Image 1 (cartoon, rainbow over the protein chains, first blue to last red):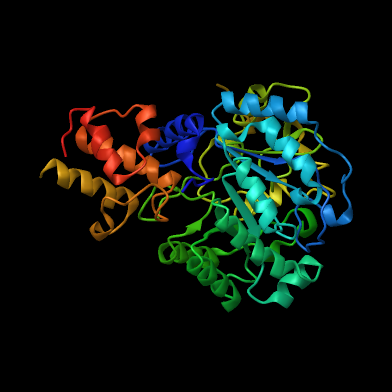
Image 2 (image 1 turned 45 degrees about the vertical axis):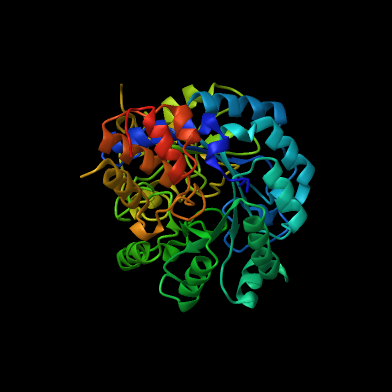
Length: 354
Length: 79
């Protein structure tokens, strides 16, 4: 049976993934400065009003701007050339304007990437899932907040959100793509039985579970109380041992003992906004360039010239490193559309000379 | 240790699976452990255990436990 997510149908991806694997093995299991993924938000409009949205979409922030498909095509070519092998399309809500999404997929040429969508699942019916698989989408990640329908719908600001999202994941699996159930975990829910129930459900369904730690950015900027503490982090690490289907971008995916840390992937995984601004990750709203103005390589090199992004960090800078958060993520009005500029926020000593 | 033992150990180590799961019908993506990440680990383990370097085309063709045996013949490894 042909499986849409199959790596073996994507020779270029195999080559890049092998390069990444070799680099990480040689680099003692750490990501170093190896290019990994592009998180692309080409439009910020959304049908839900999530309380913790990091893009401020519920406030209607820049929901009418689109990144042009010719710009996206050029970005994808450059990313491919630089060895980026993952492409995560996110929003806003991608399925709100499906025609634009499929135009974007054509521009990116998914056969070169492990391409996936992060969606709230509201419009993810069987027909849509089949079409995504046909377009060589490898994975679809759907964010779920709780096993309790009411709780999820309240956080999302719309009834039916939970039921549709849960159904959506089933359609993804049936269509042959990798189903990922995304959970945001913070100090407020790390030990909540509801969190454990979600993990169990995902495992039972043979899904992968992607854990994103809660970050004080976007709608939650300055809410430092949501950040996981040491006790929470130890608990999450224990869960990693217990649930083999559990994934964090910070963790080394090749470590079968489920212990090693790949490191914070700022710049390794870039975030690109509908304005073409390049941020070091979706949650650290610091701009290192704009793809409409500079080649991607130049932007990446600049990003890695900053010590915080070049040096290894066992902690997620945006969601776990309280010093970094306090110093660089609390500026009034700092958002994905109003990011701090790296050249302004960092001091001379923060830059590493090659 | 025979080549068959080395071959089987590569699978059980790289994919963290029990030896009982190894059979002729075992294919890429047929179990959760043999996904794209597992595939990279498997190829790396085979390269290490047999001291060979597997070409990218063969990495792509390596779609099953059985297929792998025939691919390794190219590298003068008889299972």
